[in-house]
Image (cartoon, rainbow, N blue to C red; front, side):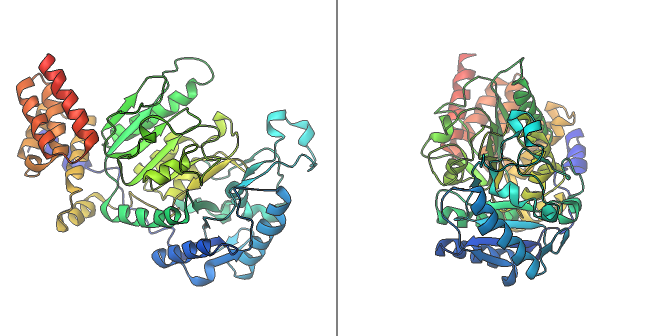
Length: 475
């Protein structure tokens, strides 16, 4: 048995650990806007697909805009919701039978500032934390602490920040995980749960794209540092990882194929490759673009980032509805580590990575979405039994993990040549070509790229392969 084969047998899909069955339908309450029929339809659809009990669905008559006043939030949303949850024995303080709250398209997103709201201690803090505008979601995450009458200005430290035990992220510890099924249309919002469930069945596969700004010093360097850590998590987890160091975002025409993960910054509105008419998101893709207002216009298909991501096919994303300050945005390395390597749900990973509550963060997607909840043997068996086209990605991930763990390139080449799937896989042929090129076997690499080009059905992959062929010919 080769060195690579031994490594693959021991660590292949090591990121996909077996997890306890947490966060099923009975642990969810669903809130919809009863003034909008589409909102209720989404709630019922979600409940049917996730086995949420009917008495966990709550409708409140709300305005249908993005933003509501602080008074409307308190009187028409927060207080009635808390009362209804308590009446149904779902959540009463820190005593709860639920862990998640799903907000459906039509529920307001932002609580506007209220300068007339005077609170003790507000004048003593720095001006940057006297603000009381926030996301609806982040305020509702505080419902387990409602009896303690938390302040509205500034932030409340998340008591489960950096939590490594998913079971501890719960109302018993002061947090209700809030996410929303939302987007540019009710139809797209409804699709989010379907996208999540399909990805759970087949797995989340593809490539990771990390878009840095090339910042080497100063206060903003921490933004690039975070994203570099994300890239390393992706690489060690076995995902082919592309890192762009240029200051601008990935431009129109960038060969971004098979996108499973995207993390980058810092454009106010969607631009570059993500503004193209078609974006090659893989089923279950998770995308995040860090900008202070990336979540301020979720229901617009062309403005900011969250709406366009959902419109182009992403399954989950997150962002900020007002200025959050860089240090108070979710910790991206922690989020992706908990999601991939610890097998957390989207909601669990999001709240484990969130430092501040009663603040600006919003998570868009099914909070129960767990793309990495299966063990490696079950994953391989399921894909093989169904003869799934995703099996090629399983093999690529295993090879990448072996290489990241120190396997020789020669062993990886030998392993790929021995796999029966390689001959008919554009994905595996491209990897073979890459390894042959780095080992100095130009003619063999060119042949592998040519085979991949012939097999590929991805326009972006074909673009990339053609460019590789040109470089080889130039050499």
